[in-house]
Image (cartoon, rainbow, N blue to C red):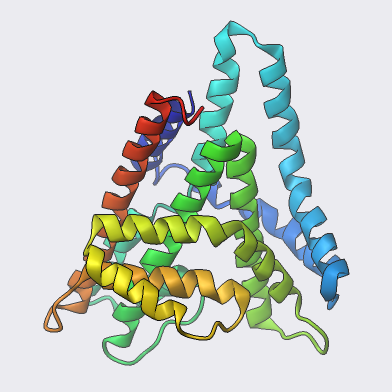
Length: 297
């Protein structure tokens, strides 16, 4: 059932992407702002525990409905199946990655630098570099990283924990995005900034998905180059814990592309998206085989 729900959600996500503006879940921002205010500058295990509780609160309604539908066992679990598809559909995103990349390339082709910069900022979650070539390179890496945050992490948590897991990962990523946005507007006066705690929490959730995403990139692209980059990265000293996931995914993904130095950077942005799409196909195929042999439910 999870496999069917996953495939159906992916199809709907692609066909209805421009109609589902509610997937951006802007109405959650007030809650996240309130939660960040409660965390304040708390650090250590107390701040982490509070952040975890505040993260789980929006997941609680989905958990209650999901458990209730499973226990009800009515109409061959059709209501639970439809609920799972709906939750997964809203968990993927908040925007369709393919549409954003296509819009970015179209704006560049049309010479609309202002709109291209706006889309780049959305993908990067920060101001895009203004130097020639650096922005396209940054967008290429952002596509590879955002795929883990928007797609692969959600799919893995859905297969492992059902709609509860998918929604948990999405709320965690939305919480992180809001914290980073707020941190960009103002810095904490002292102590540990609230966004650092939230990013570490998201880093814990994304640790396994990031490494499976790297494996998928290696299988979908240049395997030797990707594995070599993976091994090379492990020799580097890690900076902040939550930075490692994104840096590793970007490093391995770019190596898997194995692009020629003379290739257009805009073309490479499209190549990054195609690598993501091939990796999605590999993931779905593996999940289908696991389901066939009874290793996935």
